[in-house]
Each structure stands twice: as C-alpha cells, then as structure tokens.
Image (cartoon, rainbow, N blue to C red; front, side, top):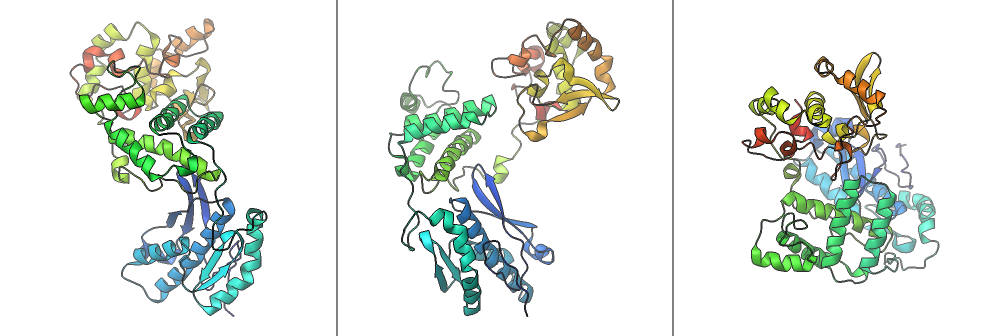
Length: 442
C-alpha cells in the first residue's frame, strides 16, 4: 500500500513526504515556510519557499498552510516524474492556486465559510476522511456563528480611525520599544491621522493610502524643524510646500513611513477591525535598492585627518567622551550609542580577556543579537583606559562617560557627531554627516 503522511489539520499528502508549513509572524503579516526536498533544491534553486498568507486568525492560517503544503507536495511529485523547463513558475502557480483555494474540481464545504478543494476522486475520498479533524480544528472559530458557507466571517465592528490610532499607540508603547522606534512610529501614524478625515476604520482603504503617498511626495525634508513650517498643521505644511517646492523626503524615508503604517493596519486586521491591510504588497523600492549601502565609508586619508594628533589635542581633550568614543568606535566597530551608554562596570575581564560588555542593562539595544562582549586591543589600554576607569570608580561614577554623552537630547552618542568632535577635519570631507558605526569601524 502507498505510504501516506497526515498533515496536522488532517489533509493527507499522498506519496510525497513533505514537512508541515512553518508559520512565521512578522510585522508585515503571517508567512508560511516550506522545506524543499534535498533532491529538488538544484532545480528549484532554493532550500526554502516562503509565501505570505492572507490576513486571518491562527486556525485559518494553519489550514491555508496545510492546503499549500498538499499542493506543493503534488508539484514536487510532478517535478520528479516529469521535469519542466520552468519549475519556479510551476511552484508559484500551484502555491498561488492553493493559497486562493483554486485546486480544481472537488469542493468540501465546512462552517464559517471554510472550503477545501481537491483535484481528483481519490484525493476527495482522503480529504473526506480527514474532514472531522479539520472541522474540529475550526470549532473555536466557528462555534458562535451561523455564517453561510459561501461567505467569510464579517469583520467585527471597528471604532473610528482616530480612536483606533490612539489605542494602537498606547498598546505599542506597552511593548517598551526603543525610544527612537516609538517616536518614529508615533510620527508616521499620527501624520496619516492628521492627513486623513476621521471615518470608521473598516472604511479605510487604498484610496486613503494613495492620498497619504501623494502627501509624502510633497512633504518637505525636516519639515518639523524648519522655520518656514514650524507650528503649522500637516495640511498647512503640504499647502505651503506646494508653493515653495522645497527638497522632499528620500525614498527610504517614505518607505519607512509606509512600513510603520503597515504595522498599524496589521494590528487592526488581527483585531478583525479591518478585513485586509491596504498596504499589503505596496513597496516604493526593490529589495536590492532597500538594502543598498546608504553611505560610503571613510577613506584611509580621511581617517588620518580625523585622528591627527594635533587636531585631537585641539578638539578632543575637553571632555572624556570626545577622546574615548572615537577610539572605541574605530577599534571595536560598535555603534556609538552602544558605547556612549556604557557603565563603568561594563569594562571588565572575562576569561582573562579585557573588553566591553554591551548589554541591555546599560540602555536600549537595536536587537537581541546586539548584546555581546567585545574584546579590546592593547592600543586602547596603552592609551590609559583602565586608569580612566579606576578614576571614575574612585569618584563613584556609574557611567563610563558622565560628561553627558550618554543622555544626549537625541539619544546616547548624539553629541559624538563628526561636526561636534572634529569640525576642522570634516570641513573638507564631502559627506558631513554623523559618524556612523558602519562607516567608522575598520
């Protein structure tokens, strides 16, 4: 007898052995990841296949993933028996069909709008055997509704747009994100609120998003701090920008505004206040453009000018942070904010190796991988770091740089900018921007 493997929702995959879909929750939505069999990876061209799932509850996402797994297993079987010239197109077609519920003729209908389609009588019989398991998995979502099988469950009654934005920002802040992340998210979502007429959230769609994109194309760079726009409402800023035609936002900045707004819409979809995310699939840049280097690094000649001894004596001896932060940055490659918020106890010895211990106890980190121990070279100690640490300890200082760099207005390290540190050196350097981690480390 042929060997069959049962999918968690009860769909029998047949001869092809396929691992179940791994559901991945990301800010942009839920994705299903499938492992490509080893013997087909060369023809398929990848180890994993990842597809976005339509906005839905967890049970339905599992069901859609199981249907996609079933269709993908049959596609892999076909590739083994009869290789095609374009396996990628075959896989894309079957996954899209399974994702949209178009796997040909036989239809099994269940409660709450659930439909399972299979493509021959044998598959239909196996699916019928699996149906009780499927219905049981759907029971929590369908027990309290008598919806017609041909209709999907309606979205719950949603509040007005402006009220839902206020609730979203409150709950977003409860996650304790980095201060900059919270500030930027609040700015983007509130900008959309201020430019969009208040209406039931369920009525917000692509038209409102298109209008927001049009507004971003007119929005001046640094509009909140420029004298011409200070104190104006967002609508007034747009009206004035139409007349003055100032430099606009970089495409990366516009993309970030849409990314933050997309998080808000995903939150609303998860609460069933919206049926779909109107920004799903909307991108202003390709992946290659998005991850292209933003700035060039310093040349060796520029680094020599930045670390010229005479220049450092003139500009870097007035405050400890101005002396130590550039040295630590260039020798460790750490972010300036990570270095600026270090505590005295973070300069420590582990397994007879001296270094800096970068942890969340000192301040916010970009991500979990940012927590690490970074060994220090002899050059740093030859410059007198341990003597400096000892002096701070004797005076009972907590922070490694108590001169104010760790709590600067715009976050730790903000006062350690290229202009603040070495104005004489960077006056002739073409990119007079803040010294960043990816441009400062060797």
